[in-house]
Length: 185
Image (cartoon, rainbow, N blue to C red; front, side):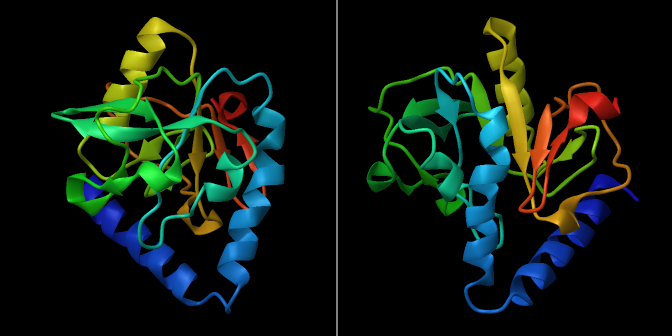
């Protein structure tokens, strides 16, 4: 399958999974992410996260465990991370909540990354515009960055195509487990 077909397949699986959850079950699963990711979130200087939309898994409960953090803001073809509170976020690119341009620009050393699908070795299938790949490449050119993909189990793929510019994830967290992708490479 090509990436377009894979995106369609995994978006449908994610949508069906979330639609099939009983009342309160989604929040319980999202809350479970915080203790599962906790071992990877020690000695953080600045963490970056994202505002989930639709049926994406929400990292909100993880965010509460690491205090001040950054959210992405689209700036042309790039993502810039700004330290901000949830209350400061406003609809931006494609109505995705983002911080104001006036919020302080920061360089996260840990980044929670949204995705459509991912392998255990850290190959990530995103939305298809390369924003996170470019952001990770830029951040990693300046300093080490731990990239943790956040997913529902139904988003774990046995294999995905990867391009030379695709940035691998270091870890993947689901409500059931934390996978060190570096051990699967």
